[in-house]
Amino acid sequence: MINIQLLLTGNELMSGDIVDSNSAMIAQELVLLGLSVRRKVAVSDDFDDLVDEISQMSKKADILIVNGGLGPTVDDLTAQALAKVSNTEIKEHPVALAHLKAWCEKRNYPLNGPNLKQAMLPEGCTIVTNSTGSAPGFMLSLNDCDIYCTPGVPRELATMLKDEILPRIENKFPNLSHHHVSRFHVFGIGESTLQKLVDEELPDWPEDIDLGFRASMPLLEIKLTTKSQHAQAIKQEWIDKIHHLLGDHLVGEINNKDRSFGDYLQELLLERKEKVTFAESCTGGILASSVTKVAGSSKVFDGSFVTYSNEMKHQLIGVREYTLVQHGAVSEQTVTEMANGALRKTHANWVVAVSGIAGPSGGTEEKPVGTVWLAWGSSAALKTCCLLIPAARHHFQHYVTAIGLDLIRRELIESAETPKYLIERSFTPKKVQ
Image (cartoon, rainbow, N blue to C red; front, side):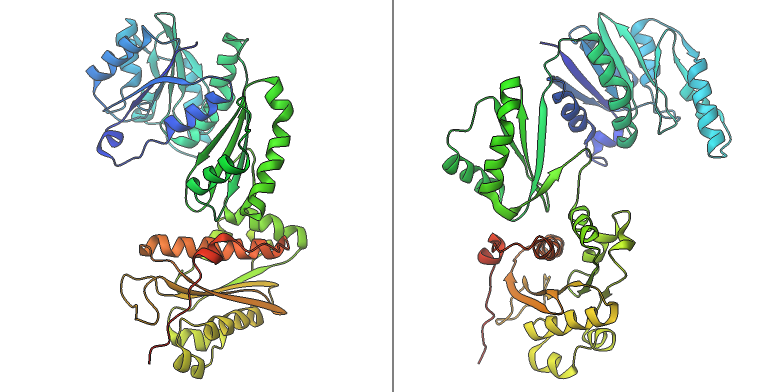
């Protein structure tokens, strides 16, 4: 068993100003090589603590990945600490210097003293190329342990792992048993319900295919990992069973990069050469933002409407004053008129309209906090529903957004299935006498 350990450094990590996502990224990449992290330690930007941990961990690990502390400021101490432990001098590294010069010239930045600090590395170290950032990574062997020093910026770390560190590990350990991972996004079924479904409906799940879940908002991830040729040969059969079990709650497969609802929706709209628009009240523009954050969104989205007040609902998208007075802003009649108005204004093919009570105040006996009406579909076939989502304001807004996007996704794939959330969250407002 190859002993891999992680050392994370940074005052921001210890104070909680930054949440550690880098160790999860490293672990996920290592899993693909059939490797796992044996131990991880986080320390502040303290020179003595860094020296002590590098010294102790290098005596037990085959590979030590140090993350953070490569920047230009005085509290970036990884290079100095490694030099101390390895009893080497800090010297200007010509490859690192060339990298910094090229990085600065490309951006028309002056190469100043703080930047030059990033070229001062332990004598004898090997540069690990950072193709996206200023700080060069580097590697040094100590106590029969390969120590990789990496930047704390997640994007830079991700590139360095895939392009530099993982290939070097593969070269050093050529007999690794590679794992193959298939990942899928699910919406509308919770983690515990999903596990219960698998336990009850697929009780003969094969032992050599690991099934894992990662709960997140709004999309839950399901992961199948194979560790043998036999498992890889039968994996598609079990993927098909998962598809059959989950139906259209399975949104799509995650490929090389993580995907959002906006990605899935854009892909479907592009296939049909169609566009979507939104009329939003309680979500305040999050629906539109979910689409436009994806590159290329102009091909599927011309614009939408955030009509928070009754006046804007009337002026911008033609909701009748009579409707607002007679039925209220949070009503089936209002969202229907919002949807039709947005379609008339934009000539889009598809629409989602939402109006609800996000809270924490504003609820009534008839329409409590968490009540939301949605209208979705096309001008030829609009559908509506009322749901009750009693949650904190932020969660309410983002869950309603996800439901709206999923309802349009289901229209685009011509799903005949009723999603669980429409059944479980369905709500009929009381008629108050």
